[in-house]
Length: 71
Image: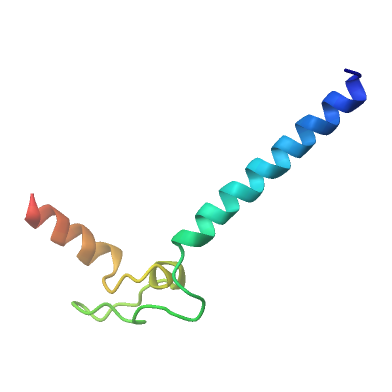
């Protein structure tokens, strides 16, 4: 196999892996347009957009406090 063909196969493999990984990441995201509340349901502080896009309804501080209380 020529080095040119080997390079083509490596590029095809890299492209396939990238597509596969992106598909897996997109599958974990909530449907577009669905976001959680802008304010924390416990303390009313703002919740960052990225966190809301993942469906969180608590700010980081309240989520950490709740996790510590569970343990």
